[in-house]
Image 1 (cartoon, rainbow, N blue to C red):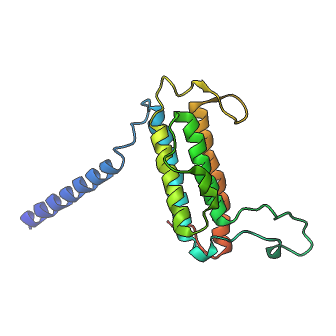
Image 2: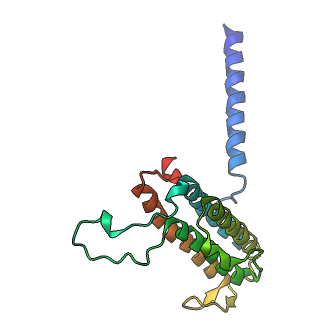
Image 3: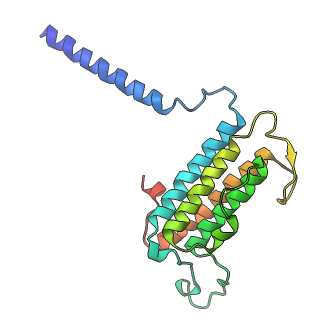
Length: 199
């Protein structure tokens, strides 16, 4: 009886250690609470969050729905609403892609390796998904240039108020969340649960 009990305890201990090791691996990238994170890591972690959600959304929408946009037909008759300039699902994604190149180019001084002016013309799912993914890759490279010394350096920017590299990086991330919120509604209108909400 005793040897069995000891063997069970050993197995449980090994399982516990394995689980602890796995948990530690997942959180290894996060600095400990109370420590001072570098600007690049702090902003990059937030960019990664919205990137995962947005890329999940663009992959979830069927290709034949990329030209979908809300219209007056879905609302109560008699409502006075303007839909002439409402973006399609594809246009939401391409707008974010263009904006990522714009904001993060200003922050870092890096030049895009694609023709940004052509992004707004994309309509096919595979092209839009690739363009958005490329823009996030560019944004990560730009954020990697942020340092404690330059993060709050005031820079020239067309955005309102005075901007620093850090505030513009934050603005770029919030801009993604803004359009992701709209894209979620588009998905729901087409009976699709956003992948981030399905977890």
